[in-house]
Length: 313
Image (cartoon, rainbow, N blue to C red; front, side, top):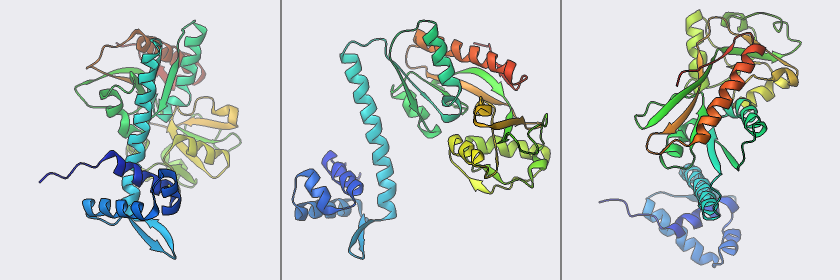
């Protein structure tokens, strides 16, 4: 038999209990009695066939399963809020609203510079730039939550159209006064004695870095693991160690007293704009693509060709 569908009220109750970490506070927020709330939670547990909460030292403690469910509930809740904003925007007749997504590598440097170019060119309208993890890109496009996504992640899907923006290699980012900061390039083997701040092998950055290390025959020894580019750069700024990033993420790092040195024999990392083939591609996407390529061309002059714009359609 199919699993019975969860009711919206059940999910709301679970979310509030998780957020408040207290039956008393949750009951007050929901406007129900605590005994009725306890009954509702017990019914949800019976329906799912798992325990969601336990008590340790008199405190309500969510189980591991509850934590995982809560992550999914919050993700869907955020998407529902985005959808609500879009609907109200359309209802107000704001046809010039342009909503798009970006993953951190492109969103931190290239996107702000591209939007500045559009602004200087007189492009009017309201922009919504959503920061996305790679796993959400497909749903974001297929369900129409945004018009396009700028990212370094490849997407292999027949209903997603991909436009290449630029190519770049990997760079080692370090404090500006680091002993290697003046080098023209660095091999992975030369970083063996450094405290490496890096990414897991299943992440987009991790895959690119591991392939570059394989090319050189070196072994990657990561001392500090991070999930986000911003964290890696923050740790370098605090002189904890060095990190390896795509050159897009390292744009303007000198302003934070850091240096970016190219990794020798690096794999090529591409910046893309993905759109859905199921929907018309508005002119605003073309404008964004042109602006991103213009920025990449400008940065190519500053990075001695580490970043190269792609002009293919």
